Length: 124
Image 1: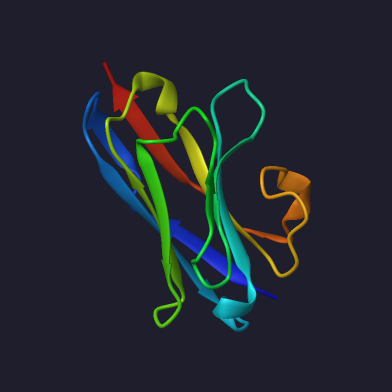
Image 2: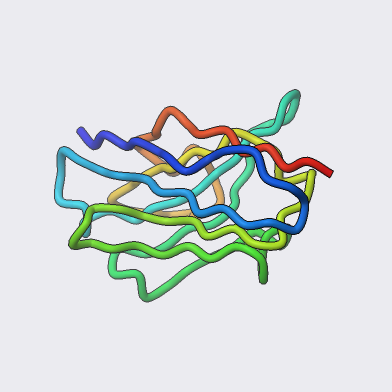
């Protein structure tokens, strides 16, 4: 089992920045590909970003490309999502997810483990 705990959410004005963290425990962190998803009220969960085990490859949804950066520190068992130029439409609960063998990085069903989520609210 992998346990994931997100932190760093909050309320920010449009144009501002936030950095989300996801701390992992339970298994060897560097064995897992990691992803960030988000879910706005009344909407389905959607892909935001993903990163490979080593951190050498990163993937982004078009809606966040150029504004969000995913990174990981395998020594600290933590994955990050740096969010800049935030927009009101970025308001959502953000979840991190982990999977050992990743087929489709943007598909939520590809991931085995999920955190409880952290709320991000962007005011206009």
